[in-house]
Amino acid sequence: MDTTADNEAAPPDQIDLRKEFDEVGIGEVLDQLDRELIGLKPVKTRIREIAALLLVERLRKRMGLATGNPTLHMSFTGNPGTGKTTVALRIASILHKLGFVRRGHVVSVTRDELVGQYIGHTAPKTKEVLKKAMGGVLFIDEAYYLYRPENERDYGQEAIEILLQVMENQRDDLVVILAGYADRMEKFFASNPGFRSRIAHHIDFPDYTDGELLGIAEGMLVEQNYHFDAEARQAFERYIAVRKTQALFANARSIRNALDRIRLRQANRLIADLDRKLTADDLMTIEAKDVLASRVFEKGEGGG
Amino acid sequence: MRMTQGCFSYLPDLTNEQIAAQVQYALGKGWAVNLEFTDDPHPRNTYWEMWGLPMFDLQDAAGVMMELAECRKVYGDRYIRLSAFDSSHGWESVRLSFIVNRPKDEPGFRLDRQEVDGRNIRYTTRPYAADKPEGSRYGG
Image 1 (cartoon, chains in turn brown, blue):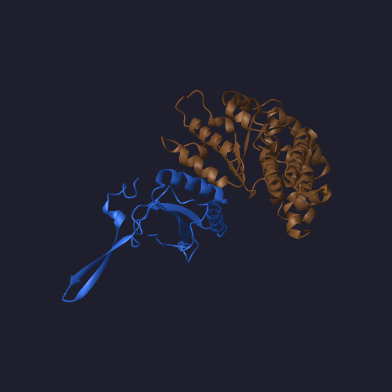
Image 2 (image 1 turned 120 degrees about the vertical axis):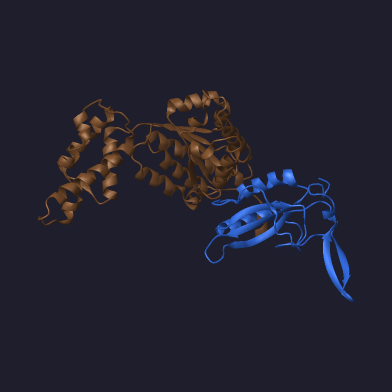
């Protein structure tokens, strides 16, 4: 009786949690998430909770206790540049390691890729995107644009219906993540109750604090082999404080764009003096005047 | 008479899991999978009609299986085949093709002999089903 085949067939009496945890390798992804993403405390906590839930679900399945796959569709709400897309990529990798999606790739789309321009165009377009995303995660950015109540003949409704159908019937094949600004998503869910009921996890992305933004900037610079000198660092702190009050502030994305322009000015400053001998440190250092030349300071607080 | 064309046609019909496994193999190789259907089973009929567009850039067989299910809903009384197209340089052709759906009743082929030029004979095969007009050949 005591053959290996029998042992495999019967559910195990005990499960070594630590071994399971190490085996699926999500600890590594979670640590990476903690390390590489600055701030976002509530998001990280939620992801850890979801990961724990899924790991337990996986063990329950092994023990023969689980009843079908859980709903995994999510909604990410938050201002632009708060890391929604980045976190979606990590979630896909976690889901893949735990075996809840088969491939673990992310297909990121907006309204344009789902909704057609004339009658009969929308369904094939939406289905094509869905087919590409099968086995992975479909990330719909600014999902509320799918629904345009002001135009009752808008084709977005058609895309929504197909999406809902697939979200319901092919939960094992596809995880959908909807993302966008909190208030507009709220309205979107209110007018499309089908979505709300099919989404298991609502995650809210908070704005970054000034300190976190500075940390993000320094992280980005280190990645590109640059660094601030002490004055430039202070100048950039001021830059963040001023930029935040101005229009179209997009958190980490604004920081990245600001750094791109600062690098441009640094290069210009270096080129201006052709007779100078440069060291590697000169090429890496960003000085205060590179930062202070920004137009952001001219406009001052609250400027457009 | 069971029609035999393409891969696996001497095997029992593939189950959905087996079809999905083949599709996943093709996708893994980077081939684009297509669905085609016809009700003219003559072996020289190479022009089957396409179900939708070729499916490029898929990662998982589930998308193809979804289309296949829909194609079966509409053309379940006809032959449906699945082909995998390799677009890489030097190949640019179909690498794998097999039948995934066939009519319940396949009447087979008639062999016509035509006597010409003294004692010579010319042979023609003709599907019995093709006697009926297109669209009503397999009771559909």
